[in-house]
Amino acid sequence: MTAQRRPSDAVFAAFGCRGTRPERLDGGRGLTWRSGPVVVRPTGDGDEANWRAGVLERLVHTDRFRTPRPIRAASGRWVEDGWEGWQWVPGKADESRILDVVKAGTAFHHAIAALPRPAFIDTADDPWACADRIAWGEAPLPADALLERLAAAFRPVESPSQLIHGDLLGNVLFTEGEPPMIIDWAPYWRPAGLGAAIAAVDAVCWHGTPIELLPEIGRGIDEWDQLLVRALAFRIVTLHLRNAWNASLMDRHASIVDAALRLVQQR
Image (cartoon, rainbow, N blue to C red; front, side, top):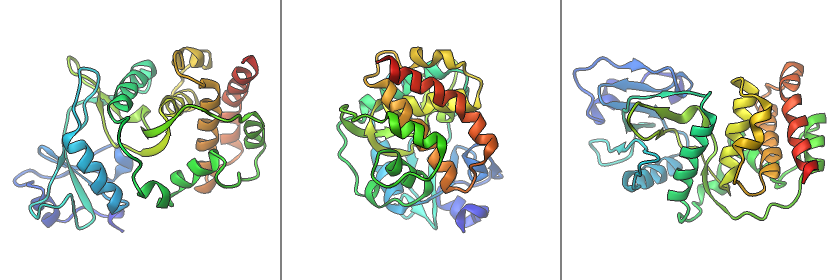
């Protein structure tokens, strides 16, 4: 599989990488490589990759967010032998800056709000896409005590759906004096506030953000309590589908499930 090997020299050359020794980057699950000003990463779904590059090639940046620009291969294609090329940008993720991540994500979601729903949303079948559908009632939930508690709190969500970034927390890079850089767009078709809710769940579960900050993270976001319970269901179901769910992860998620359910009860 492409994701398990180094890109060939021909791939690097196709994206204009010459004279610089490639280095594996820490992010991107260890599958992303940099050569000079170019980042090369494996492509999952080709339709999604081509669509994303076409959007981000022309997306207008603001003083609140930026995105890397895609790089065409010498062939003129966005994808070359299962790999795609992107502009390398300096910056570092900081998962402790959850409020700044949400602010950047909100600006990004505003900029893409008018985009139509792409067809690949309905055909994606990776664990994350399947978990998203399950969390929104489009397929049955796995048998799990925490999921049963969350599902009992589900209420209809009236906020309109649009394209969102569903994995913001570790994919917003900060550089002094520059707008935040949003990378590795994971597209879903859901209410815009879900991106913030998933980031909040990740921040509390994995990066030490206090549970007490959850209301502040969601300040001004409509139906925040419902988006939180859906975000939790999404992350837990994904772990089930990847055969990673165990007693330790259940303990890790239990307190934030309790907190989210308290927010639901307070409404």
